Length: 164
Image 1 (tube, rainbow, N blue to C red):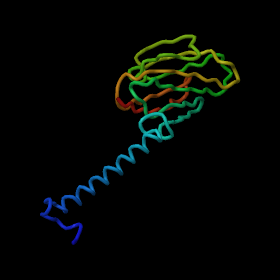
Image 2 (image 1 turned 45 degrees about the vertical axis):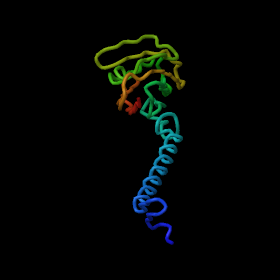
Image 3 (image 1 turned 135 degrees about the horizontal axis):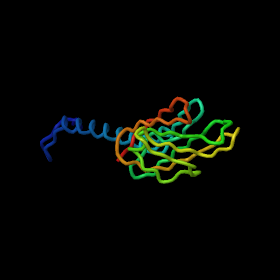
């Protein structure tokens, strides 16, 4: 007797339907495996796929490309060595609207907010590369396009996707 043939006795079977269900189950298993691997590699937060470094003329920024709305995000700004004792970091309005700053280390000497965004002025050691860390909590979901620039150099563009 053929095991894949439909039967009526002892129980009514529909083997064509059963074969379709097996295919659907296998597709589901593969999808669960792909989602699990993507999560392990950082597609939904901290990991290899999420970690990014954006560089510009005078600055580089390390950040997570994928963030969670419930997680504190960190942005690490590294300034190139300069003869100036102060450096001004400008973050555009999208950062101001998309994130709430929890902590800035080291604290800025001065800060100001205007229609274009946030300006933070830091005391730096001349002729030495300096680092600033900003910890911020996301306000909303979706993509946030952030432009960051130091002094009057061209901006460095960051794209952050925030999951609920």
